[in-house]
Amino acid sequence: MIIALTGATGNMGQATVGQLLKIDEIDKLRLLVLPDDKRIKKLLKKHKKDKQKFEIVFGNLAEKAACEKLVKDADYVVNMAAVIPPHSDQQPEKAIECNQVGVDTLVSVIEKMKKQPKLIHISTMALYGNRNSLHPWGRVGDPLLVSAFDIYAVTKLRGELRVLESDIENFVVLRQTAMLHSRMLADNMSDGLMFHTCFNAPLEWVTAHDSGVLVANIIRKDLKEDLSKKFWKRVFNIGGGLKNCITGYDTLNEGFKLIGGSTKDFFEPNFNATRNFHGMWFFDGDKLEDMFHYQLQTTEDFWKELGKANSYFKLGKLVPKKLIKKFAIERLFKSPNSPKYWAKHQDEAKLSAYFGGSEKFAKISKNWGDFGLFVENKDEFSKPLDYEKLKDKNSAKLVDFGIDIESEKFSIKDLQKYAKMHGGKLISTHCSSPYEKLVWQNSDGQNFEARPFTVVKAGHWFNRSYAENVWDFDRLAKKDKIYAQIWFDSHGQDENKTYSFDKDFVAKMENI
Image (cartoon, rainbow, N blue to C red):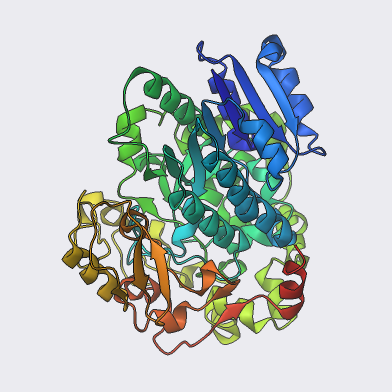
């Protein structure tokens, strides 16, 4: 049996490779690796006793020839390749090439094969966009309101849509949640990206190890039984379980404990964005766990292991906290990805997207006593909040779609009602299958073709972000009852912003 892998040298990829090597039925792991990826040598050295099982294909996911060589005679293809933040922010053209064009190329190659491999496509929870205390819990099917200026999320959105609308017989889309990995601290100390994490963002974490276990267990179980009726051609959230449902503040706090500090020791309330991040707790996170039993580690386990593996963190306890704050945290204010940089350079578009404008940013107190934290039983408006109740799934407030999106069958009336909730309508008059392509019309009067499963069960409703690097949700939410339920949790009805990349970026993208 041959397993083809993309993104194998990444954090999830390395964990997945390690787990797949434990499956006796696998004869070969064929990896697509960029020619300049130096991590492949380290990966092969780590698994040198299994070197006969590896086959390396050097190339780019956007190259047809490389994809053809990768998937030839493969039984499964696991697509984990992605250009993620902060690299996607620094080189957005690479994100488009990999996350969007690359997925299209891979899917097109598989579609033309006489004997198609099964495709496991790793997507992202970044598709859901910003959440706060009003709707911290969500599920597959929720509106996909990708954060403004997040080229990673919007390219992953387009890539996922390509998979869902493809002619691949057996595929599954897995939306990866926030992932804990060994390079966690190093990756987040090199760029202003860490300041995008809202302190009150509801984040559900999973470790890279557990993600690798999940992929391996999927293949193990698929070899033993028919999963077609409950797994293939579906979309799932990869979650870490209730114990791993925390907030952005909690996450930073756990990391800083390794050096004897806390979030409040090194951050001030106005360091980080108050909206436009991504994150939520998965109401349906138990679906994959019930099938594949992969949730083995907690965030607490992760930080303990990281501390043991990096004993030098203890030295941080000897350094004055003020020095760490100044030379490790505040030095990142110079990063173009930092809110302080936006304020200094009067980038009103970024300040509007992440704070509601420069005036609101300026009003954020430097005093933690004036800032509402969920973990201290205050909401983002400093009003009383029961944090434990907020984390209780049984009291979760979910999005109202006008129909039951958990149903396995939808009538034409159901689909018409759903489209109306989006401010649009269903043009097609008949539907015999959730995978039959129908014609819909969005609230702007644009017709688009998509399967009922893609639209209702997966949440894809066509808007400008699918075709352009434009985020227009202030306007769309005013006439879309589904978008409105989430968007206006953190945006005012009086906001009328359209966010987009500048003309230089657009011109550059046209040459790709």
